Image (cartoon, rainbow, N blue to C red; front, side, top):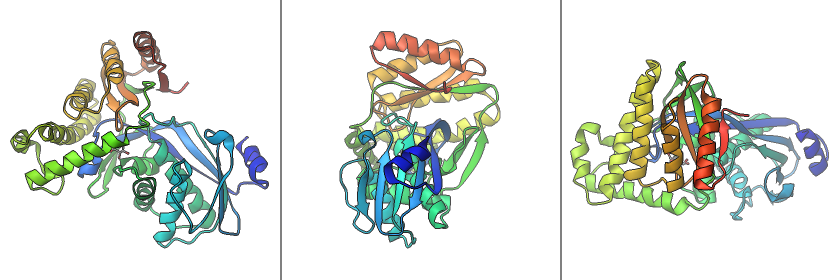
Length: 366
Ligand code: GLA
């Protein structure tokens, strides 16, 4: 099917396919740019790239979802910020070349089932799937931290969106059966199996976070200001035992830093609860994380709070929280094994009728 689309657009056949999954973060939110811990897992939705080298310096790309499949073009070495989706690809080729990797022009067709603006990392899935296709096509040697760094540089320095490294690392390394317990300070990680007694439900609230970059950057700046007052390089350096120092900061830096320090403390506790299959403890940590994001970090919105509250009120739900950067997007709920499909349907039905919005069930997949 996509081979046919490729042929229609560019003539010829794609020689390689690269792909990367979207992610849902289970806990550890807004900790990655503070040197802290995160715990993402892959979702079934993914981005795929069909690619063929051209033999010159031209790049021609088309997306199945954006621009009605129109072909966009640029030349390697002349990447610039255009203010559209190609910036992610242009950023990737720009920094791949800048970091000394040798490759040529290409044609690529991209198709994705990761919803955009839903807090599930569609942009990292695009960056990493393009990189995976380029690795296959040009025989490049890049390890996951290098792939993640180039993807993040594309996003930070070319697109102009400040983000941490979680999403790109998850797009490289996460799988659906385990969670990636990642220390964003040194990129060491451990794969932790999802607890056997539970399943995940992921629901997109129908509120897009499309215009949230300014709010995200404001939180980042508040963390930097808190660090300066506390005399530390990163909020990771503040242990939970030292929370009193954080409480003494002026408003709202005290609450922002309290979120990061308590959230960072919750991640290893969530890992321990997963290993012990202690679903009540894990669910409570989800709930506490949501309250902290809502009240201290102030990155939730009323519709997402409503969706979380409806999920939490369900007898088969251990806990629920906003996932991703916030200001809209998706929730993740920890649900009794075997109940995920029914819970997802009950919760979305109640939420749709109370909010008037259109939610989408992403996990379990239909
Ligand atoms: C976005 C960013 C990540 C991370 C999360 C919040 O997804 O891309 O780096 O900061 O928000 O946890």
